[in-house]
Image 1 (cartoon, rainbow, N blue to C red):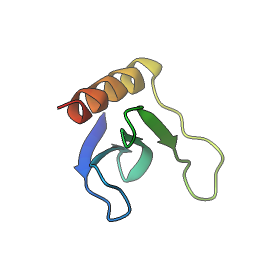
Image 2 (cartoon, one colour; image 1 turned 45 degrees about the vertical axis):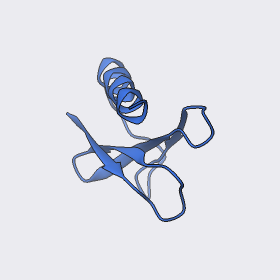
Image 3 (cartoon, rainbow, N blue to C red; image 1 turned 90 degrees about the vertical axis):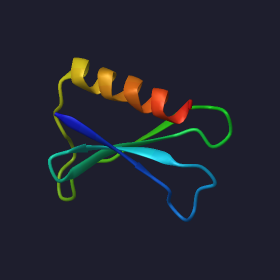
Image 4 (cartoon, helix red, strand yellow; image 1 turned 120 degrees about the vertical axis):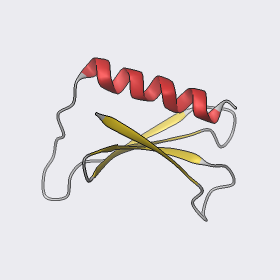
Length: 69
């Protein structure tokens, strides 16, 4: 299951939501300028991470809801 972590990085004005699968950060969702953005990461040493499309979509939806508060 993709876990969400709300964090406040020092280089951002607002909080972000990190998406984690086990010990791997998949992505970061932010809303710095009124536009939701997703930064997608890959596992070091590889060029892909496989995750269920439905699960990713649900995680992104929950991330957006957390940032819209």
